[in-house]
Amino acid sequence: MKLPAILIDLDDTLLEVQLDHFIQAYFQSLSDYAASYGIGNGFVKALGEGTRKMLHNEDPTVTLEEAFAEYFYPAVNAFLPQHLKSSHHEPPQDPHPLYTIMMEFYEQVFPQLEKITRKKEESRELVDNLVEKGYLVAIATNPLFPQKATYQRLRWAGLDPEKYPFTVVTTYEDFHFTKPKLEYYAEVLARLGWDMDGAVMIGNNLIDDIDPAQRLGMATFWMNTNGKDSKNQPVHIRYTAPKGEGKLCEALAWLQTLDCSQLQINVNQLEVAKAVLKSTLALMDTWRRKTLHADQWLRKSKAEDWSPLEVLYHLGDVESEIYLPRIWKIISEESPNIKNIDASGWNVERHYQEKDLTEGINTFIEKRMETLQVIDSLGEDDWQRKALHETRGEMDLKTLIVSIAKHDIEHIRQIHQEMH
Image (cartoon, rainbow, N blue to C red; front, side, top):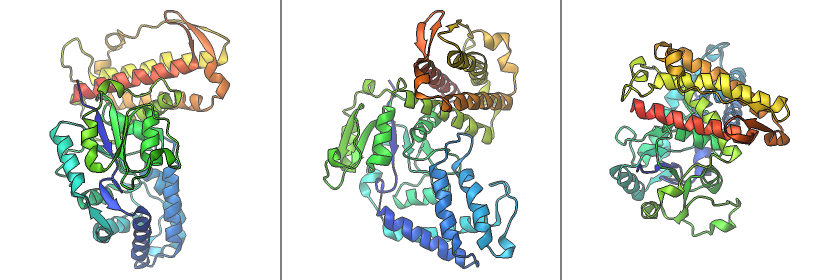
């Protein structure tokens, strides 16, 4: 039996910081640094609006950095001295001249903000214990900062990311969603390969950390240092998974009482299934941006197993030839009959092992985007539309979407296990 994955928030959870005060000081110091280069007062307003663009990003093929840059750099151009203006940029390969200045800020000035935070010994004790016991540990901080800033805050907490084996640290360079979206949590779990026995979220914020994780089906531990009753907080959470609350130093003892059989993700819930579909697309987008080593994708533990490349092409072809046509059939016909299609032999028949890796990723992304566009266009009544499956009997559109999400999880886990 695997252990559950542990997702832990950073600010006000692992690192003590008065967040409102910290953000105010951060914006002021960045504004002052920009002013030293002759950049006008509209800089801060553009920075705030760029942050809102990240918070509202819904596109699984657009990173948060790209969502920020698309608005921020054109908006701030009017406030820049002439030598910093740019009419074209493609970050990070061809960054805006201001990008270099901002990265210098994170290296030279941002570290001074450590003085308004406080290291907590219990944070390091908790993480040390989790790592020693073999848990997968992910730093699930809202990915509104670049990696440089996030890694520094981890060091302020006494948790140097170069020394601790964090499986995932969420930053704006390679994440697509923010808290409190379900897609954010699904993207973290997808990046972990769905290769865990359930998942737990530890955080201090009921709205950003606890409520969405619970809706996804994760167990949650609310770090309650003020003695407040969670029932009287502004957000009313329907606890469907195990929950705990207390001081951070009490989290480990609570974790050890969990029954992993209770920690299953609520894929049967439509909002969760839709989040999973988007998280798979976000994962594929992450893969295509990285340097991919083809030999990893050709691995097989046993001769009869499917390689990750074969699984990838299976996902793309099933999306294109089975799932997407079925969705269209159900929404365009009244109670249609759906034939069963056996795709189990396609890997051999279609020579998946000989195909191009990048083409396989791009094909899946294209088809999944089509699927999501159709899903996003549906009204409430559409989810009740029914069909008669040749072997599974009567099913509605919601059931089909749930089955696609389960199929995603099964095969992303298969890819992950083969590659690791």
